[in-house]
Length: 393
Image (cartoon, rainbow, N blue to C red; front, side, top):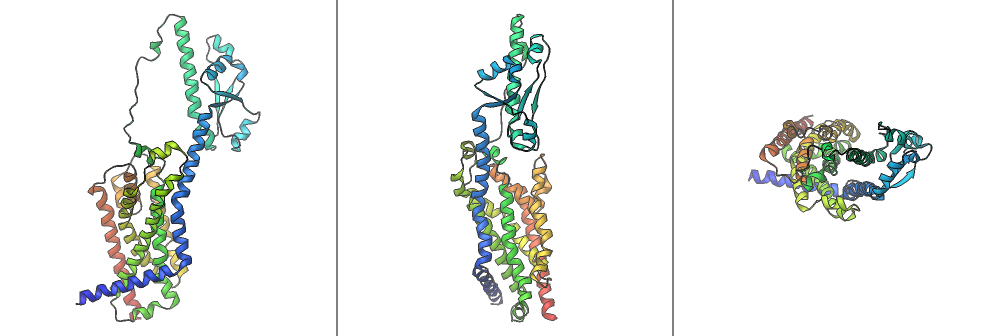
């Protein structure tokens, strides 16, 4: 009977906290609005960037300075169906100022004479590494010049009666082992970071309001004076915090499903597959994070006297969890085993595996689950002890 009464009280506290959170429409709108808009805005930005790059590639234009010095190269480029455009005189300044968004091929005055004499004329590929759009056009221009070099060398060998196969003694064939989903994950790798931040900010407001916020309003001490076990209060408040964090994460995940209709890039639309399986998988992977972070934020806020003081104390958690996924982005060596033990980083790694279409194993899932359970138990015990101390005072 006591057991049933305990859980009934937990449910009452949970219902009260959820109703209070849902009544605060301004806070609710501030949390739910970005979560719903997250998917469409992110995919629209990615789609716009990729489609602009594809459109520029389809235009098949080359920006050249000094093309009159290289009629042979002009002939090659035109046979490749490229349109040659003269570079502006101040192309260097425009590249630095990002007003010019394509690299420039610079040809010297002695190009044709050196080529006919058998020398190696030098051309320059001018870009600016800080100008990302211009840098993206460098590989295509390099491939064009490599093709010109192969054709010229083949013609020189043919004129001397030498087989052109000597230029390529080994035939090379490329085979990409990555699936379509894995290739798409290189573009969509930022999505898990948004989901993690959705969990964090969804739980943050509720965790601070149910502890430091109630203390500031003077409603926490009267609540503790009721004949209810402190652990029942703590569990009810914690469950509401975790549920709100998961709810915001769910909305953020669901927003990516209809957002796929807004993709303008055919290649991205073909690669990016985000359906209800991914939504459910992402939600389940956030359970340990929402539970552990909710308890940790409550533990940090329970000693604070004001809401602002609690916000300042939670800054470190926000920074750590928000930046943790950056480790996997900055480390090209793949997921290390310790990644799955770090809150935030573990969920990011697991969601990336889901996006790649890979099967998750118990070895990958258990560390994050164990850390989430341990963090939840330790922090909730601390919150309950702090509440008992508040009653004793």
